[in-house]
Image 1 (cartoon, rainbow, N blue to C red):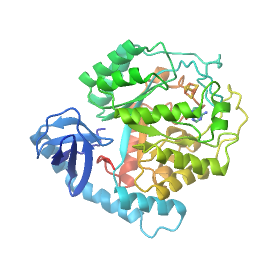
Image 2: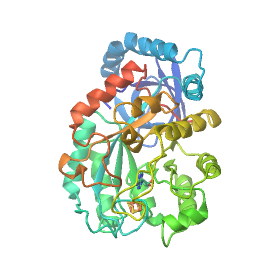
Image 3: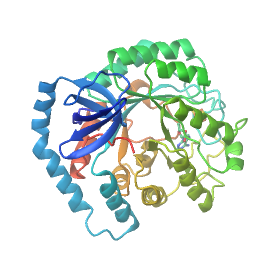
Image 4: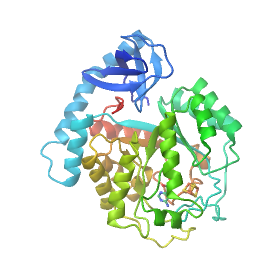
Length: 393
Ligand code: 5AD
Ligand code: SF4
């Protein structure tokens, strides 16, 4: 986002390039640009998403230089002498991945869903929810504003499984966004055919956010009627083979989930070699069959982050909005201090935001986007996190 630093191209090996951010090096993939050594680019999620004229990049870097090293110092000071599990995890995050932190924007463009997952407020059987679909132009405009005005470099397009958005509509949206607002475009609208995903890849989409929800196949089938875990895992693997960056994970605290399941969830996520882990607490919704299930504690959610970090030190781990919901004041900071190094800001137009009710009382639905961005940037600066790309493993 606006909080981003250009990287200098210092090595090119076909589509694999190395970028330098001051004295740090990161790998990235370049699918879209003709680049030469010494060029400057913005990368996100290990992907080159925009080339920047050299003079402009050098100007930006000048304003960043001192601040960049100051952020490193702050991060270092905050990770000294780790004692608790969370501190150990945070220390490991710094050692392996430095102080980089990705900030993605998310646009929730439709709350229709033909599925009936027991845990989700968007489930088709929830008749009390007012449903909305954003028009294609509105989605594109929102993405343009996100990339242009707010400077987001990675955008997630999310919805329920809504077949109203067919191949033609999705392709048009992806093509236009890539033309008007180049960004790392991450698709998060559930299970679609490989053919559609292939065409969307060709249109420029490069990421898929799709959770497997639980590694326990019996629990999966109970929670997602008419669906099987195997199908979901196959889709995730096929999408990875297709070239998509994969963001995946699970729900923490589903009724019937055991401690062992949770550890298996972490291992299963890792076995899919995701570019980003996305897992968060299950928060029961009053209009679902799981309405009486208790929320997991903040500690349970933070423990999952810390364990993942310690087990897989190179992981990119998202601090999710569901995590923030557990404690509006503290949870995001706590997640970043327990090993997470990525977060999302909701860019859905305000009039729809409260209707995207996967779970009730999402974090700060009342905030406007600019204020949320300001708050997040202040937090990142307090924690010494820099907007350099995390790069590829
Ligand atoms: N609480 C937290 N997360 C939820 N999701 C669905 N329902 C809930 C809930 N009640 C998550 C699922 C899904 C993502 C879009 O939202 O993990 O993959
Ligand atoms: Fe639909 Fe996804 Fe909710 Fe399941 S979790 S009901 S697929 S929006």
